[in-house]
Amino acid sequence: MVTAFASLLVTVLFALYNGFLGIYHGSVWYAAICLYYLLLAVLRGTVIAAEKKIFARGGNEKARDRTHLAASVLLLILNISMIGPITMMVTQQKPVDMTLIPAIVMAAYTTYKVTMASVHLRRSSKVGNSLVRLLRTINFIDALVSILTLQNTLIMVSSKGDGMKLLPLSAASSAVIPAAALCVSVVSICHGIRRLRRAPRAPKAQ
Image (cartoon, rainbow, N blue to C red; front, side):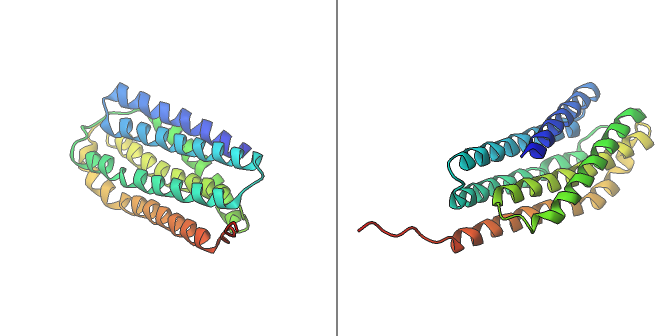
């Protein structure tokens, strides 16, 4: 939970940085990424608060599984909404002449997220707490989207303001990342449904 809370704070800061880039450069893409990360942070914060509340009440696994399933559905909807910004990136975004500083910031964030997500994802199979597993799934999706953001930033930096020439190629290569995020969300939903079905039902009162 401590690690998840720290990751939440880093995500919020990264979201605000993307919001700054969106305003400064007049970029719809970075504004959309800012909104995505803020919503992802809200979802992560909600899961952390739910786990804290459930743990304080004795750790009801059925309550955890219900929260896991509801949050997984919201995560899927959030990832589906990413299709819009990606489409805008290809068809509407104007060329942006960016310096190397945003690319360095994006690379640092992406390296941090991918490293932490990889370490935690390997341990997820050994964790019985469904909400902890969900938090690690959210971290993994966070890392995937950060790769997409880094790729777009590198194109903007290397193309020196004429990024539209490379955006179709970027969209084609980036199609794998949203698809992977959607697949992970669907797997999380299926996992939540299976856990709820396996949960023992409370005996009826006589």
